Image 1 (cartoon, one colour):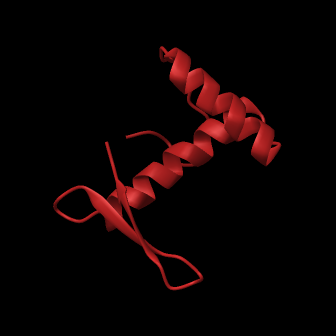
Image 2 (cartoon, helix red, strand yellow):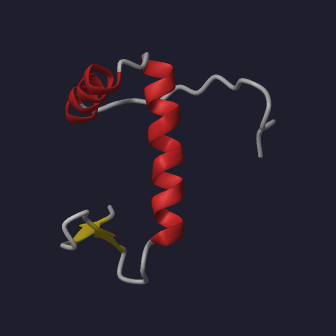
Length: 72
């Protein structure tokens, strides 16, 4: 467990696909790498709390359409 109020340095190896996704996220959000990665990790943790037993999250679009997202 880490200090919720402090900063902790993490190092990880990102694949080419992950790097492209990070670049796209930064371009779309205007965030820097640190903020984009922090937001993505928080979002992943939130999605996992809503995931069904089969690893899916069901999202209701504004038009009423249900979309099924399969989490890795």
